[in-house]
Image (cartoon, rainbow, N blue to C red; front, side):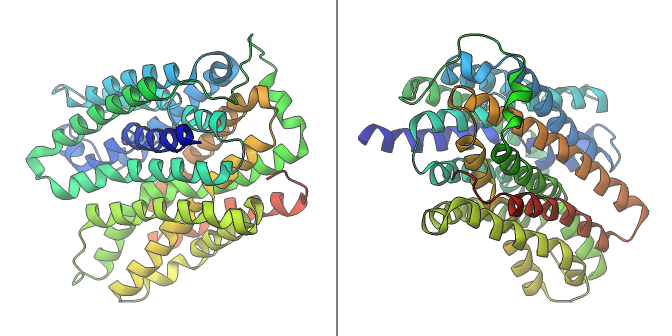
Length: 392
């Protein structure tokens, strides 16, 4: 028990340190655009490059059942080191859009050895109350994702490279923490061989499918919202020119507040059940998507902040709960691979929603584009309503 109390904080800190790599490019996007003559559409492309790298990494990890065949802590360390190197590549003076896309792709690829592997490590230590444990890990992911925006809000324009150096160093620290203090967990059930069919076998279980489809619906909304938070705030400022917004700092707060809601959701799931909690939160985020155009029609910064902070909370709070449902409804010997598979598909979906919003932002009034994000939660809710006996 004492050991588990030490293990979870270490995993959480390491997860925060390493996932700061995720949106490091977004935190310095305007600086990259200025220094390397990029156009505004580069935001969507560079974000999608990270997602596509993550998808490719999780796909390969899943096919080779990396998470279940090798020590998760060693995989985490190696991924943190290589991910930090790719992130540092954006510091080179002769970069262009192509090289930046390659560096962001590489960062995303090795994040596949960090985020789902971190959840795998947690599941190896915490068989009961997994939803609560994962809520801390996803909360760390949220803060890590938002952290580059905080750094951007604190440093001067000329110090943008510090953000990349800082996030790369944090990733190295996170990997070292895991390898030094988190050995293989007591509930680890390692697989001894490559089983290419695992990718398809896990979906034969209808309960697993329902949990996975709920997660997919949640992912349709999540990263598109996170990517477009700065653009949403800038759009509001353009509609109401007298409004002055610190976009980087607000982006950090709106995304980062989700870390708190993840923990709240984890504790709430103990009271009323993981599935029910996930379903309520998914419904609330769906409603935020639907009513989002109204916020642009109200000249009130307080209402804007209140709405976006609430949306920032509910858009992510169900993520650890869906991951727990996926893990609990997957065969124990394939649990790590199952989590990796679901992450792979879920992040594939994020590329579609991010690119769709990028396109819609260019061809229609941007105040209406966020309503399309409701499609994912609606389909996720339908999947959950069809299955009442999901293990949680």
